[in-house]
Each structure stands twice: as C-alpha cells, then as structure tokens.
Amino acid sequence: MSKRNKIIYWIATLWLALGMISTGIVQLMQIKEETEMMNHLGYPLYFLTLLGVWKLLGVIAILIPKFGLLKEWAYAGFFFAMSGAVVSHLAVGDSAKELFGPILLIVLTIVSWYYRPANRKCFTN
Image (cartoon, rainbow, N blue to C red):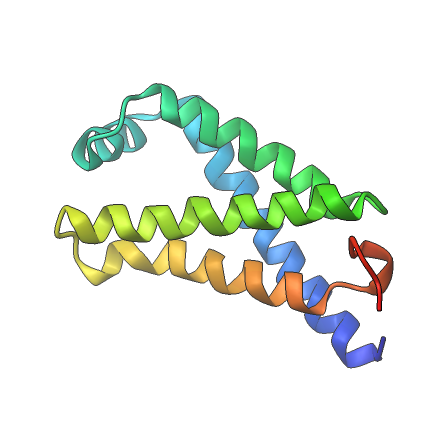
C-alpha cells in the first residue's frame, strides 16, 4: 500500500470515527434536538439508543486491527444508517442543509472502506 493511500485511509477513517462517535454519543444522551429530530422524522425514540450503540461499536470495529469480516459489517452498517438518514430527511421534505452530515459520513465510509489496507480486509486478492 502506497504512503498516499495510507494517508487517505487514515484521514478518512479518523474523520469517520469522529463523526460516528460524536453523533453516537449525542444519540445515547438523547438531547432535546435529537429527540425532536426523531419525532420529526417519525421514528420511535428507542432508535436513538440503537443507533448510538451501533455507531460506537462500529467505530471500535473499524479501528481495531484484524477482524476483517467484522469491519465489513461495520462499514455496511454505517452506509445503511447514513443512507437511511438521507432518505428519511428527503421523505419529510427537509432542506439540503439536513443532508450534509449524513452525505459526508457516507463519503467518508466509502473512502475509508476503499482505501483500507490489505490486513484490514475480509478477503485479500
């Protein structure tokens, strides 16, 4: 793996981890803005706990060495959760401003997944 690709991987992965940790903690704390957003989107409040826990576990999975299959599941979970957030915001007619965070996290998920080193992959060529 080239030095350039390692740098891209670690920048994307650390930003992804920071984004998922921060939103996961906010969801677990169920602050007023988060509960209002979940109500606005039409989801039950217990989704905040589920999403928060899954995000924190996903961050652990992508940062620890080895466990390639677990990493694949974490990346897939991040992609599904964030694409679901985009669709949810679109479904209720939210502005483009509400899409920025989830779309950024989707991009970071894809970049981190694509540039991950061979020792962090489930299957190597």
